[in-house]
Image (tube, one colour):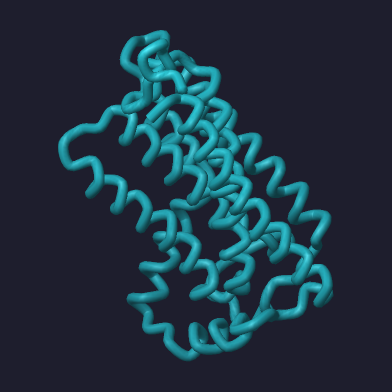
Length: 227
């Protein structure tokens, strides 16, 4: 695949996710932050199905979606993606920039939307701030995406299995937020869409501007391959 084609594909995926996120955001704002679709039902189901072992597991999973862990994993993604010391340093900086800027933009959207969380009585863990989009969900999805991209760049044997494991982690962090009662499910969906849109933008820019050796499986157009 040509580098330009990959950049266009990443940009198209990102645009689609941004469109979905924009529509969902308008619906949330239009309903004054009230629960949507199955939001209330899912939280009620979660409250009614909380054995101690499940709550402990959910708390453990949700704890990995914030704080130092996502940034440490972003650094790991940069180390995996680069092949030389200089490439790794640049890749680490890019991964951290993508994650940090994404979090800052999400926080801005969250503050503007100012959606209330589910009732405090339903919470099974600590939470703070507004609800939409979910911060833990966005952060873990962005981190998972960076790791999956890094693994794909290096393409080790068994990389699809690694990508599935990382992707499942990102999904579980989001689901844990609703299970623990601190987010509506549409907050989680918003976090996933936001992360996918931001990753598409970042990947599209990186694919277009980074050296070819950083995007294996792509090729520059030549006289023989150019249309």
